[in-house]
Image (tube, rainbow, N blue to C red; front, side, top):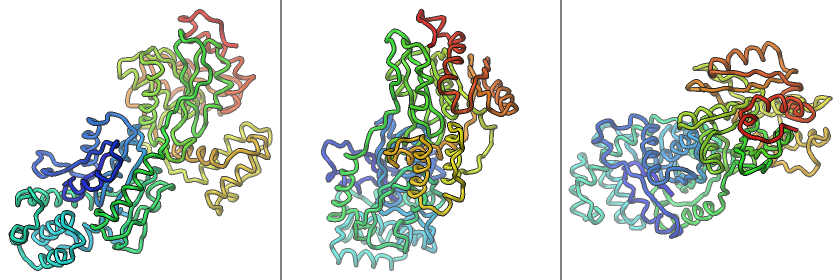
Length: 549
């Protein structure tokens, strides 16, 4: 568990929390003391988060990661999680203790520390520094001692930060071992982190958060600005107390119990699905399904290859488990898949296949493997669109738009299209949309009657993430790519696709095969074109076993 510093950059505020967590749980705290003395201090909260990611990777090179933070620390943890996920990592827990999303909050500030009792409302630098010193002291003193709290409030009447420090030393309010210079160090760190936080706009994410809130809030928004920004399955835990007392017992005990409970319940993501075991002496074929598709979509295709060939599918994160959010970048998905591919096959040459959106991931896997010095022998892209042009931005696809795209895919597998329109879903709640679609798919014979709604939830969740993902390869693939296109597709689009792909590969073998975007994956179509493809694969030259069935 990594705990991210609050405004002052001091990690010691987490000592009581760490003591309450399970003893077998390794706990690390990140600090920002001395940030003002760096030759090139971070100029944005995103840059600060990136620095912290470098630090946690030295302790834990790969996910799944667990992050939490109080106050602005939660904001920094959120950005760290966002960057880690985009880098292909898994974040299995994100806890935010009374953290405000300043961009979505009516008061446009970060948290209680930067709001009513904070430098954000101060008129001059000296007043800001006095407020920061007082706030820092609030994290250290006994919050149940009313006399001390009253004395702290009186410090606001002083005009100089030095006077405040003198009074603290006189009253022995500074914690043991904390000097005047230590307070100043925290003061300078606070000035920078507050500035970084005020300029931060939290990106939307499907990652669920655990938000722990105090009773005393600065707005009527019980979600502190996170509703509609964080994942749909986010949980808000009302803890009680104030912004400062929430970090002390008994409130802190509730937070520790909740963290421990949710860490134990987090499932582990593993994308690998074995379709055909084959022979251990033959290098496997790794297959990536299309947008929102499961390994079953490639079953008939995979079984059209020789039985000696081991075939694995790599399923998307978030497809079968709502707690694992989908990848939001092709590069991130590729990095994740490579880790699991190497657990099966540590070294090349590798053989890759991807259908539709999965072709982008397969292509990026090949690029990353080549960059790592590995060899890719066979790369097969099945009806995969050309990459996005550099600088291209996609028009966002919402949930209903995703459902309509999914219906188009199902219609490719039917003789009669589903009697569904966009208007059927516009006014329905998300759960009702799923039930309505599931009912139609069951009636059409595409899904069994006992199919759980969670199956479609996962499909739509992943598909929407995929539809909103751009991909432009950063370099050219040095090798042969087999580009398989469906005969029933648009001829002009197929021609354009081939032309564009040639700009990203050194060799291209285009093939036109029977069927449409979906039926090309099924028998009897696969029986013919897989046998034809097999003759052109390196497998055929290197392995002495019979051709495809």
